[in-house]
Image (tube, rainbow, N blue to C red):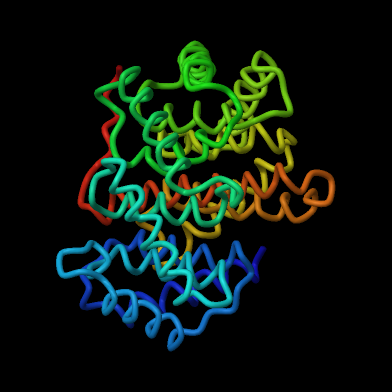
Length: 324
């Protein structure tokens, strides 16, 4: 884990220095840095700068990709694809399909295009996938109008890939949302994220998942970590992957290590999230052979969840945590 943290800090400092005139939130650089660590991808500042400049050059005049969202886009493309500039063309094509379905212009829709590019069913035309994604998002907004926004697009695109019809899917999501409030979690957009992630699982009965979530929340607190709404999606991922005491102890130690580092000491809540992601990825690596599909999905969910949070930062918006 020490090597992971050293690499994370090194990349962060390079990005912070190189893009200091961007006036970007530090969490953008923290998120980009974590992608290289989580994907075990070598980082080249020259390659990354070239890619982000290419993204800016190719973007339309009023595109969000001419601003800080291109930094996240660059990290996602660079860590996932051998030919990131070619894949940018695919992202733009999917983005146009999403816009045709009345998705809003902006970073969240570009994030959704990235999710569909990496996890979409290549046997199904993208216009069908984008149509189903909008159908799911509209159903989500109908259920929770005050907390559902464009920042829910990415996970809606993952949910749209499930076999259930939209009504069945919404019933499943709502079950987890209500049950989660029953174990003391607070209503809001982060709880909605959590319920979306649990809804993607096909390995457990829904009642068992609620019990696993309850246990994950208890272990998180027992380890000495403060549980904030920001951490709810990570809690859902832990409920799906590992409830062992040692897992939460590793997260606590990793978060403490990050909190002691000067560049990150003012971001303790985000550090806990980063620590959880780092520990979970080591679990994915160990258990991937057992269920390749499950852990590939979990990695995609983690990316979608983090990217959605970053999209709110990049867009200068705060996700509402008011109840619904």
